[in-house]
Length: 342
Image (cartoon, rainbow, N blue to C red):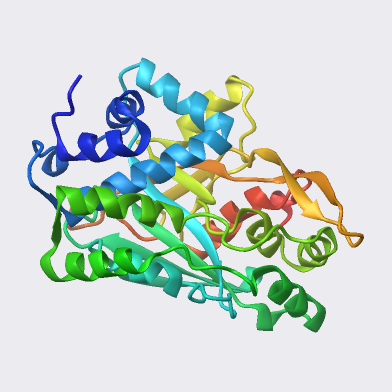
């Protein structure tokens, strides 16, 4: 089948026709982004295409998310992609911009604006939410967190620098030029958008060498979040399905025997309710002190569920909640994470 929309055409070039059609059927596409194939691509279309590619990448790393999405697609109930989350480090990272700056340079030209800042003090981090200017309720938000190494021990800080200090910026000069053009015009030609999309996707990965096992253990002792960054880098930590009743969804998933978070996270306003599958366990390669490599099983990414209730003016409450976020982040703290003890 020939793609009928700009979005399908962009995705076909990235992941092939079959996966492009599956993604645009399994994940709800907002009506304003169902534009027929044309000579130009809007920033909203490009932003949504990138979000779907990052979701596709997460499906390859989180089998439970794939099961859930394929069941929804089978039942003709497209998933509503609410937001994706990623982690960064506010420290020198080789040629890669430090912390959130590695992504603000992408998100702003794509039409995003920083909406709110959330102190995640228990984790030694700061979270920032980015919402799309054109379609804030329909284009997935990004929750970008920064870890602050200076809040931890000297030994921890040294390990952080050994892990991320040789990071490499994956964004080529041509992509920077296209982003500048997109920021100015709000659109690109289809050819330009097709060239830019894989470069944008490449930024959501690990940009530093394989970590040493000794450094991983040092980081894990003080911050499971930084240990996660050591193995996964800037890949999606989780992607989130917006559902009508998160408690009902969680109960259905538990009855299916799936590894759900034990309790719901409810925001201070009461309007934002979240839960999640526990993180997938994955095998990662580490360097040993003797120069050889070892494989260890560590926490990977996960899939989240969120219910957003309307505010008094009828608009959807797009806010996050620092307490909710810190509870959700514990999904990647390992099998023994004491999420119910906090």
